[in-house]
Image (cartoon, rainbow over all chains, first blue to last red; front, side, top):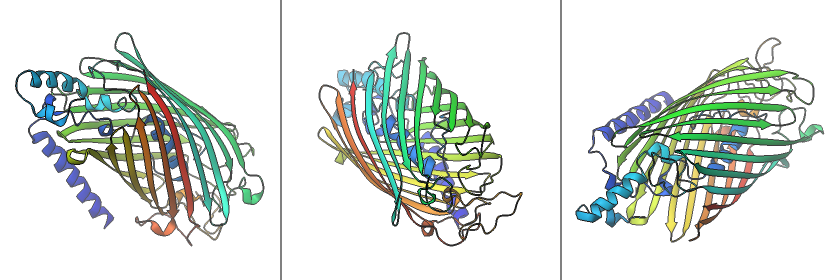
Length: 75
Length: 390
């Protein structure tokens, strides 16, 4: 069941990414909303560091955000 | 900042002015991503940011189980971003983690339950230099972290390349961490761990209100993975990890709000699989920002995890762990963040989150022997921040 859910997720992501490429490209003058701070993928660096550090110390999964951040004795 | 009406004015000067400003505003979505948090959007995203910023944050964390306080962490932290001559930007942060208390119940020799408890001071800093080119950026970073029993040194290199229309950015990265472990109970002396990370990612503008980012990271680790503070803990001396993270931000013009979604799939050679889903609603109310959030994560147990009763399943010479972090569980984190931006560039924010982790909230099957359920782990996280652009 989990595997089929994963396959659906992969398929949806692939379709959306491909459709994004196929759509009319967004023009520079249409990017005002995209430039808003909340549309950034890193809104608050210290918040991100703290939150990921806590989750790394209490859960097993990590990764996806970047590389070479270094380890700690917390996990 | 142009309004949504401005960008719909596609004639004459309005169009030219908006085109000039906005092409700069998000010329490279991936490049702007790391900087927009603390600075105004640079005039040309291909060049180093024109504004610098300084941020201070005080972080407090406590976790507890029914009838027992566990760990407390108090952590002041600091972040600075400085544009430099010649299309460079320098970014650095520092955090001082003061840790006290005990790890979650179920077998560790330093737990409060066994009388010793944990007290540690972690000092961690990182520095990153980024050079901006016409349609690319190259960053080199270094991180250092030290505790009583653990030292970590890491470096990373990342390259980001934008398409001609600046709607697509590809990112590639490589990092290496070198960790040394000397446990205070002398179980692990002179042990080490080496980890190499690789990243490939894409950031794509889908519509004028949608941007999506998808990153794949693969990490190859070799060395000491046991927990020297657990009574019996023997893990493989290698761990490879795969994580696929996709984030989607959607701007809702009619409400002046942003919906932020994220999903991560994870698996590793310990036999653990995990799925993490996150959502945030960033509501702008004048100069205030209100952001409620909800995160759910679930993981399966490691192949060599054995739940209570301890130490059922332990066979000398084989991997064995009763670490709660390697068990199967689900966890929820509701939270809320309030932020205010002042006209002179000062910013303040406050964030509160509640975390609860339960064995019976897990949704992924497989892995080790879970045994009976562990006690729920509950936690509270608080952050208070002050920052300024200059």
